[in-house]
Image (cartoon, rainbow, N blue to C red; front, side, top):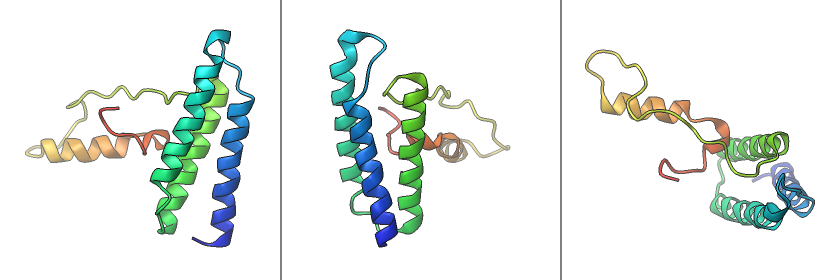
Length: 120
């Protein structure tokens, strides 16, 4: 990881914590739980991606984090937006069934959900 990338990741990490510190929920009783969620999610995802060395994968993670920050601030909701895509709901060519569906589902996944599994 280059020093420029490292400083960008660290500034993004600090930005997430600043957002969590000043977070105000739409429902006042949920403010503390949402703040804890933001901190916990940031710690989990940053630690999960700590060992990345490939510049493109680091860039994807940075883009995902920035997208989640912007979506969270815009909608005032720290939780990732759900993805409503039926299991076999994408069109395929003749003869290509399950593998093509899995590949298309992976490609259709928005950037802000790249770190999340299918079942979460």
